[in-house]
Length: 379
Length: 157
Image (tube, rainbow over all chains, first blue to last red):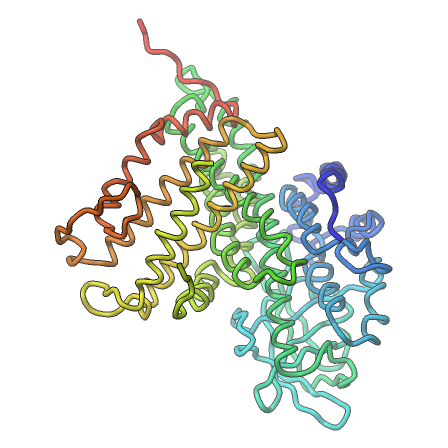
């Protein structure tokens, strides 16, 4: 069951209060160069706040939908919050929640919901494709064992995960989705140095890594392909929420700056050249907000078409929000181009959001496949 | 309510018509545009924007019903709609190439998405100018929604 409008608004206020003091610019900058990239204390507090299980079915979580995580994800974007919530909560816990492997649910769902266990999902190819057919990990069966070889790319938060959910292709080219302990022999996790250092991505290598067929998330073949696609869509939705928070904050700070900063004896925001930049940002933010809000319920609606909805979302929102951050730098002028100003942190984060889980162009190509079919639209 | 209708028309008579035509209409007199990767991506981008427009209109209607609508929000929709309409018609004309520049009888219907793309493109300026030009809309958004200071009156005005 989804949260009511009032409950969502309470959640947003609580999230904002928490992040305002736990994720200040100083805190964020302090974690930019440390290898972990976030504060374990803040993670525990997020667990205490119930954020890690909000989207999980009762009794593990509050029984809300993934859409209700939207509220928290937007606020986290607004404060550039650093935590493994994307890898472990959005992707990992959701994967378990959708698994039909009861033993796996018993083993992991509660631990992920309370934050004592952390997961990461390896669903992208080494080169960053989110097409299941491009997966660059192979699986070979040996009795009740599955042996994995290959490399997965751009895995969020793998460095602090104790379990990995791995997409692989078997000897027939059929996808499987399987759990591997992160400390298994043959697993190597290497950081990918991204321009945005507020979040962490990893290359995960598998050298004859063994797992058991009993640890498959779902049946090999179509079921695994569908679940991998779905998890990638959740990732795309999550980074669009993040990008929206990032863009809303940049809009607010830029409007404030344009009101405060004077030039030629006037606030620069009174000049139409500047005012119109700000208005364009506001239009992009309003449209992005409407699109994100409209996409939330899709995940809980059996009649909805999440593939098309998420392709539309990622095509528009992720690009519009990074453009908003670009205009923010321009309006801030020289100060916006300095290390001390936060604008570059927001811009880099928005740009990572734009590309992670499929670039806008990649999603448009997928969208084109669904709309350029004969009689896609009957009139 | 008017904008809701316009938004739905832009979907049905605009982008969906263009996509439906894609199997038969030619780009630059040669390839059909349903087969052209660049054209497909372009139209998918516009299609996404048309659906976002619908979300934007729906969210405004919901806000009006709840009584939480802010006046300048309608300027946001007007701006987004008219510029999207213009982009859409521009792209349609661009895909037609020289064939789209041949005179054809105008349809006797009131509409902005007649399928005569060049004519629709020309008419799109009616939307970016009328009802308060988009520049005026940007001033209103800047001042009313974002609280930016007004432009000072000129000396002697």
